[in-house]
Figure 1 (cartoon, rainbow, N blue to C red):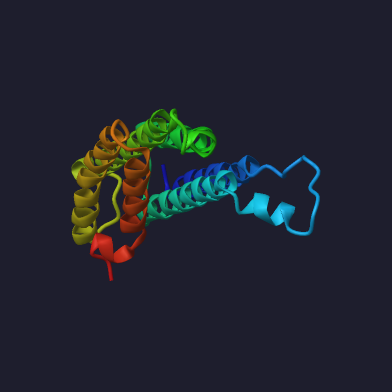
Figure 2: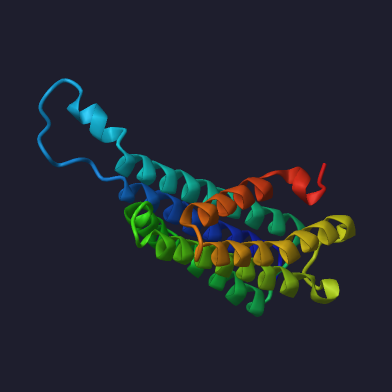
Length: 203
């Protein structure tokens, strides 16, 4: 496929990312009960229940945003695609569209006895996304068939990141067995780490 084909793949992927990130806001439910007193509604909006909803929404919004940025970074190095690349990219998008479900689950269960299970589902989803990114990238760099010329340094740094990601999210999944907050905290730390361009050694 030519560069036009690459642009179409990225445009389609951008649309999927946009839909997934928009669906997250549906988990922020407007209170339906009747409130009495000047500050009753405000107290409800800053309650632990709503704060956990805000936290899960923020974490997932930023996570998908960082996924989109890293997806874009791949396409700055890939100048053509083949059928296998399209399918691996589709697998990645499948997991991205799944993110609103563990986000909703985390928002409803974090802080309860089922919080560890919800955190495990969230970390497992992040792990599958990290693995999908890794497989997509490994296919792209195999024999450098799909890569733009003169990108060896950036390819090396990006490959180093993808070796680290799945292992880190696997640790987050294991942490969920002991502490939901520790697992979610590690996921948030990884999102921040992957967000910075300097993490890839890029200038």
